[in-house]
Length: 566
Image 1 (tube, helix red, strand yellow):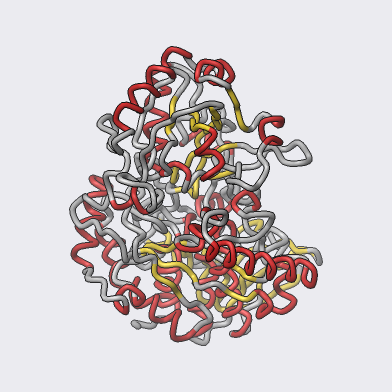
Image 2 (cartoon, rainbow, N blue to C red):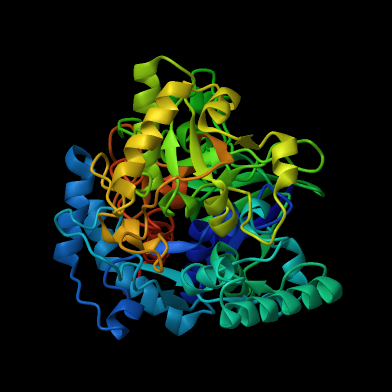
């Protein structure tokens, strides 16, 4: 068997793994990253790329007033009895330092989401903005030939393959037919996109999670860190002192024994595509298959199994084992089903969500995690399939789109023909198409419209928080999230429960060291990202609460492995 030596072996190439790698390499450690799939980037490359890190440098530069004490108050409220004080304190202490480190020593640069509110901004310690940051857009040509191995973004959340940024850029796309400025902006981006496709075969203007991975990967390559793809880890290796000292990795040239002198880091992305563990931990998925995840197919829980084989255990005590998001299933040209996560349309005026009873069950503009909890609770009460439907009229469909259906002028009839988009001339006809109670749906819409005419929602208070309003239509008055559902034809999209990453992970300490059953660190073994148990207590406090801790604990792990204090 071939043998390869390094100081640090990182298993997984998402944000957690790559941030660990670049942080360790900066401290003059010899680092190797191995990835089982043919592309690097993990779930991060498919994601929105936001990172929740209180007191970050972009917020300080923008004059945002925040403090670690205020953030700790918020996280204590959010996590409740599952508040992990030592790990939370480590995150809050290191987070701002990690952001400074990346900006000063790597290709990773950040932009602030100034109006990107915490998901519960009215809770103790909550903020109306300033804690969520995103990687600055990146020119993929800077990766050179390595751009070919970068995982592409999730196709369902692109427009013909073109990545679209959040905030003002997204508003330009919504206003393309109503504003000459927006039309010019979008047209210019589209011309660049067509140029890139002609010359490079893929977009070179990288956004969101794709930009985050590209910037971290560029930093790794600049510091001499190789990323082996098509290199799954078969098992961890321990020395005579029971220290994790490396791993056996399968490659195209055969098995290789990796000797890691300083440490092994598990960063394989959790278990969103492992039906066995989903069956165990996802109440809405009794067989493990009643679940749809936009995560890559390779995220099958390898890191958790490797950790367990080394004596670690998975924390299954959290009230929610994953970050829930409503998913719809558009039909691809080859007949397979895609996964579209619903982030924005939930907040738009004129969109409501109902179960098969025809009744609403939630403030649709609340966080996707909260939305899914309410959906599961209502469906359990109704003893039916765990699903729901977004409902809108023709005007709203063409103005904002609905799920995978894009707004005008993009055609939409093909989605009706495929069965993704349900259509009814009347509410009763739509109810029959989706298997809902016709009288219940009619009654729900009539009651909703009475108050929506005035921008009010006394039943669920849609539009009542800064987070609600941040994703509504700022030009719609008086409430950017509420409008009546007026005139047919009417449309619906079916929703099921999906995830944006798993919360249940390996028990770790504040240094990212993996813990044995007795609570002591397993020598030589670390875990970051979704392979580590979430510090959020099974809740979802704000945009980026998976990637923020991932890049922070990557920095922490490298700091501890190298013996540094900065």
